[in-house]
Amino acid sequence: MQGTVARFDEETHHGTLLLDDGSEVAFGADAFAASGLRLLRLGQRMTIDRDERGEVISITFPGLI
Image (cartoon, rainbow, N blue to C red):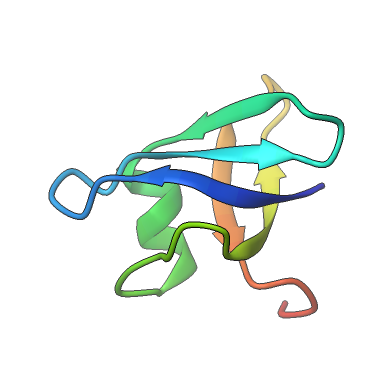
């Protein structure tokens, strides 16, 4: 599933992605840490992975594994 970064707090590493269907999904510091990234820019395109409960567990650049 893909979306764009709508919000990102550089201090807490929590943020929100605007998905392609127009819905928003929040991600926490653990999902950001799993990305290996240092920061995110608003409008940046990302892919999300979710667990069986629907929680976002990681965010990555599209096409990266």
